[in-house]
Amino acid sequence: MSRRRRQRDRKLELERQLRRLPLAGEDEAEERGLALVRAAHAERVPVHPSRRSRRVAAAFGAGAIALAIGLSPAGAKVGDLVSEVVGIGEDEARPALRSLPAAGELLVESEQGVWIVREDGSRRRLGDYDQGSWSPRGLFVVVAEGRELTAVDPLGEVRWSRSAPGPVRDPRWGGLGFDTRIAYRSGNDLRVVAGDGNGDRLVASNVAEVAPAWRPPGDSKLETVEARHVVTYVTADKEIRSVDVDSGERVETTEGDLERLGTPAAGGVGKRALSPDRTAMATLDYVDGRDELVLQRDGEKRQRVLFSARGLLTGPTWSPDGRWLLVGWPAADQWLFISAEQRNRVVAFERISEQFDPGGDRGGRFPRVSGWILPQR
Image (cartoon, rainbow, N blue to C red):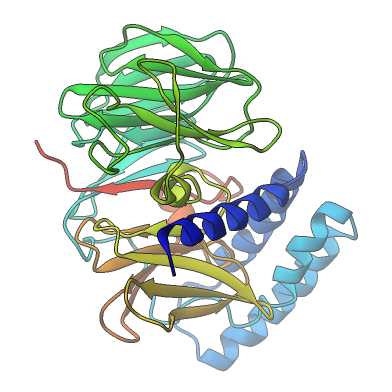
């Protein structure tokens, strides 16, 4: 298949995903239902019952949850999950998050703020922020809270902060070395600021509620030395555009731009993630009531199903070495580290919401992984 045809097919698929963007309030309704599922699952007696006992207990919990959700239209999607709740969760899940299966650090967003998870499993809360994004070398994190855009170090110390015209969402840090830029949504506008907090400016107005995606420097033959900071975004009319933020000129959108725009790490509309070496794509496909984690490598004609679960999964996120994929299982309140190389190798941790909401009632949103990076400190 030619590059041009692959790019066209990728764009058509992304446009289909964009047409399926959720309606206002749908995500909140689904999250409330998922919170009920997680709460019922978390209230199990903390022993190790038989597999049959777990299924019976989950069946009773599912009935109560179904009554709580009711028959609202927004709850229908959660209702599909509840109908599959029996048998959720990995039986051998470990009760506490321990060392990661690969080198690097996670950036996690939870109800209580933005966190860093180190390789040994230790956690540090950076602050009461809504969202975060790693800098290219993992030296800093850009975080958003209200109308404030802030850069902090891995200890949570503020390096700079600036106010935006509108609520800040989906900050994304891109660039090379110390010549970096941060793209973010401010209300309905897309804005860009230099990595040191200077030079804030408007890039586009009337953009969709989709996070922007940076093109890595040197990623395309179309790129020149003068066009080092290219960002791809979606307009309110769901048109996909790429622009050199330094010159303000539009540039051709590449296949790589489309792939990055559609990944969870970029806040995209799809459930897929491009491997660090850009040779494999991991995708979550919902088939007959199950979410399947599917891997497609360059040069391989057939896809491989790495994992299948009842209900909905979140992610996926690649490890920096490209050997592991992290997905969330909200209904089971678990994280699953799934090997991309060894068949049927899964390392699971449960009670994830509790670990990122200490002292809470586990009723908040399920923690979201916004990046897994090997810091160059």
